[in-house]
Length: 79
Image (cartoon, rainbow, N blue to C red; front, side):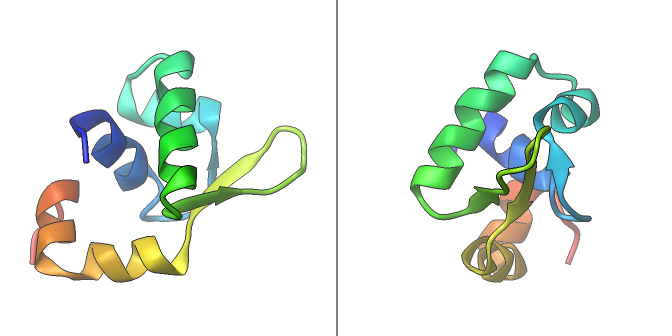
């Protein structure tokens, strides 16, 4: 997982956000966040609804991963 993907996923730990909300929280550009969300969705870690604007959230797979030590470390979550 890249640093940008970890930052994107980390922004969703507390709940769903729009891509703009993620960009503000992570201080990344909207286009960078979009790229990371597409990749995270391909591997099953995030899902977006069909509303406009789209809300993105962590899947159960990502939530389980974030509870494991490697996930906590990657997301910068203290044990």
